[in-house]
Amino acid sequence: MITIRGLKKWFDTRRGRVEALRGIDLEIGEREFCVLLGPSGCGKTTTLRCVAGLERPDAGEIEIEGVTVNAPARRVYVPTEKRDIGMVFQSYAIWPHMNVFQNVAFPLVRGRKRFGKELVAEKVRRALHLVQLDGLEDRPATDLSGGQQQRVAMARAMVTEPKILLMDEPLSNLDARLREQMRVELKKITRAVGVTTLYVTHDQAEALSLGDRVCVMHGGEILQVAAPDEVYARPANIFVAEFVGEMNFVKAKIAAGSVECALGSLELPVPPAFAAAGAVTLAIRPEHVELAAADGASGPLVGTIASKNYLGDAALVEIEVNGVTLLAKLPGDTEIAVGQRAAVVLRPERWRVFAE
Ligand SMILES: Nc1ncnc2c1ncn2[C@@H]1O[C@H](COP(=O)(O)OP(=O)(O)O)[C@@H](O)[C@H]1O
Ligand SMILES: [Mg+2]
Image 1 (tube, rainbow, N blue to C red):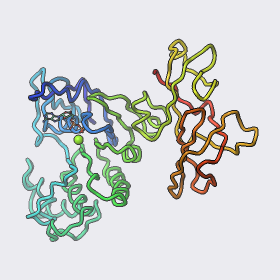
Image 2 (image 1 turned 120 degrees about the vertical axis):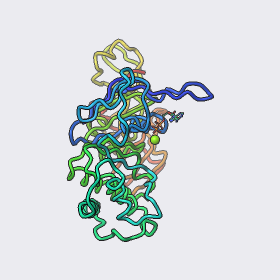
Image 3 (image 1 turned 135 degrees about the vertical axis):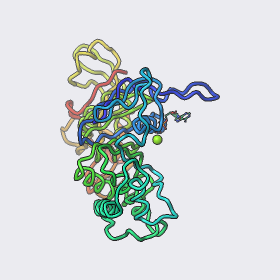
């Protein structure tokens, strides 16, 4: 379990102060897989490095398994090697002059606790089994593929059987297909071991598929922490809506009982908080933009197909309606061509409403 309270970190640089973390509050439960998601520079790595003890926060507190490891106001700082954590980075940090065994055994040989030779061998064997590299102990590290190196890094992080696993973009250097395979495997491994995991990525698909909870960050702050389906279906604000998945946005004005926008007058359930707001932004996911034959009596909104991007299982189609371009995600075998007219069906319950 990890508890982060009011965490702040700034860097004083020649160009002035960079506020990397502006007050992070986050609780990660026992055995939970929590993903920090956000664009480059939002403070993900800094958060992880503070938990690891590699960076000293300027304010706030961090607890690991009930022990305060950072509290600058009380001058508390527990060094990295005294924290019960394993770490995996984007650059695998595998030592090229060592073989697989030596790489994985490193934390056991150099760590605080000393183990007998046979116990080290047994722990390394178990760690390699976990990442499906059984029997590769003697292989030189340089003879491994990128995917295998990543597994060695995983085995090395897990060999001490830490309570906490910290991972910073560990799959970013792998090619797309391998990345997806490793994603599935990584989840299986962490679940099997029951380790509490804090995982950093800028890749929203990775975050949604891996996280028990996803924590969306922006500008050194947390914007939303929730289960992946919750973040996707009910983003807390426009930034989250735009960063996680694809989204269509339409500016609108709230009039008595209805919502007016370029698409016309829409009848939507407007949350009471927005009723007096006047101006709002409406949002709808591409998979919720439905198209129907233009000649039927299916609705007043008719548009023209402006582009079509065929993806196999799906087709992404841009349709222009009343000067608004909407992105629609349709089944791949939908027969529709650029220039064709189609009716657009936007179900009221599919819209999200945001402050302007
Ligand atoms: N050692 C450092 N010195 C100065 N600025 C830093 C340092 N480390 C990080 N930063 C700044 O802090 C902010 C957050 O960085 P980081 O945590 O690495 O973001 P992320 O991992 O989300 O891409 C960025 O603006 C970055 O430039
Ligand atoms: Mg980073």
